[in-house]
Length: 300
Image 1 (cartoon, rainbow, N blue to C red):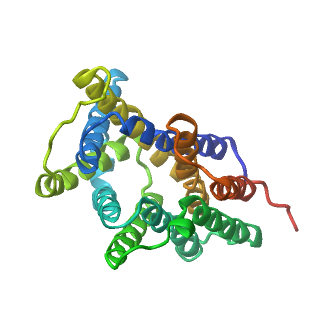
Image 2 (image 1 turned 30 degrees about the horizontal axis):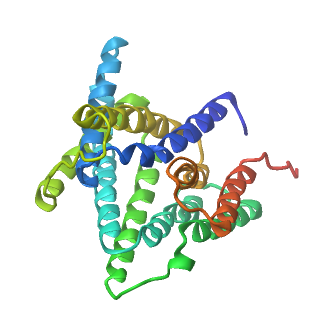
């Protein structure tokens, strides 16, 4: 049934995916390791949302947070470890292979949601899932690039692990009830930042290279704040807030909008190559997401 609540939730989910997809453009102006950026994203996003709540004279509901603390903190930790495994996948394998493995997550959610949440898997949605997966194979470029070297397998396993954890974030959030979008997002981002900081300190050597960046340190700080506030605080509030009113299958399929937006912007703004194969894949993914959400005919 399509209600005003589900319509607003769907719009919020799509908006969050579009925002996530633009982060790559701004990432180019931040000469810091990805893990440190991710930890700072979580911290800045959490502080921004707390400040926004204070400006609105809202306080986190400690009673609601305590009531669902195990699931809430677990989902935040899973989000942080998800980012870590994705960084490790990029370290050992190509971006194409890592991306393809990572976006197996929506498939996992769609396959398990009938058993966990009683969601019906229709034939049309099944076809859309297959089309989206085929589109991601084309978009990733893995067919053209291939797998090079024995070390690739480690990266592929990290990517698949990240996919499992990404699916876990979606499934755990579906089990959270009675929490505002702000409350759940503040706790989850803060927990993710706590998880990421030790990993960053153990694995990264921080060295700023401002060569070629117009504006120098001021530009880097501005981009870091933008990524923390908009791409994390705002985007995750929209993302987590939309989940309570949408089926897990919808959240999963719409997740494919993120990489497609990233690839299209990379081609349009950064001059990255995008061939016919990637274009066909993008059309398949976006078409599948659109068709999957068209109202089903009532056969009764």
